[in-house]
Image 1 (cartoon, rainbow, N blue to C red):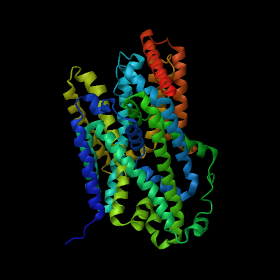
Image 2: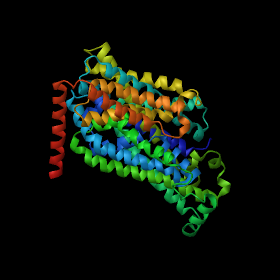
Image 3: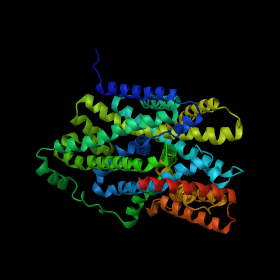
Image 4: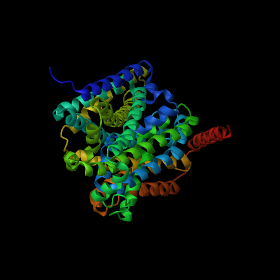
Length: 503
């Protein structure tokens, strides 16, 4: 009789639970608004945790701890930048976007919102923004599937192709069945699993160091003398580039859609507090895992072979060493959670863009709600197949583009989102120019100026922001109807916030 594999059993139960949530969400999905935006019914806890989980991919449990293990706290600047960017996104964008999308004909997607906000009667902005979303998310989805496949491959020894299909099918099933509610509810569960694993791991690793209170500093000094120095080997450009990751938050469709789905603008302040607390604790746990891991493996060099070869395995290796196999299975499911939560939201955003912004507008204007839901499900399957094809070769060059997909979204949509919510004088032509300037700058800078060390989101974001302002001021003012809708939404947001503050 073959030996029971506790980790495999834990993963199977986890995947069954996710599909079960999808089936439950299926019953709550009655129309297309439910399928792609949950009927705008998310409370503060689900809004906060689903936004956090969809943001943090496998990088949180693999890439960041590995970078800290290899270089020390000098790699923590990116975490600081992400925290600042996320907080500003919650503060400046979340509530206003929730209100403005509702006033813009109850927009269900970002291209839908842009169309109403700028009176895009020729639908040029809708098409351009939809294409930007589809191009970058096709790459993102492929990357997520590779990460999931690599996890299954390393844990269970499956061949890459088998691991790819199993990991993909697990995510596709609950997204396709339950839509936005399934994604949001599973993200909330996955966020809980992620924070549990990230808080537990560094504490147990620290306690596992013999005579830890006296030896930790000694071991750290012996292994990485400059580990405490956050400025070690970094120029001003390098620090700014790391922190500039925070700019990306303003333009990430899979995060912004969570704000749009909140049940009320009054939900946002509580969601901000919950979401930021979750994010800070998770990033702190990831940094702590890599940092404490330096001392642990310095004391136990006989166990360090795998981590020395690939630092990104530090979380998995500590888990194998320190925990009972059954507990280890639960904690490793947190890595799968990070991968699945991000991938599922990306698949749904792609599906909603294809269905709401292209199929409904250009193919079937009079499509019924039931038809749109089923078209949305078919689109999830279609996009997934495309992503699987792109992910067939894990060394494919397309996956190298993921490094600046975040910058692409941030530069193309970030300035557009911010100015559209704060400046009524912004015009349709400036929105089109802003998207194109941001996206093109990121791509050109990455391929021609990458050796400067400056993260491409910085020039992309700045040039997009400037181009929107210049084109708006040089052009004709928006139609009065467009300005009036903006003013009504802005007034409603301010009155709701004033009422909330006075309570």
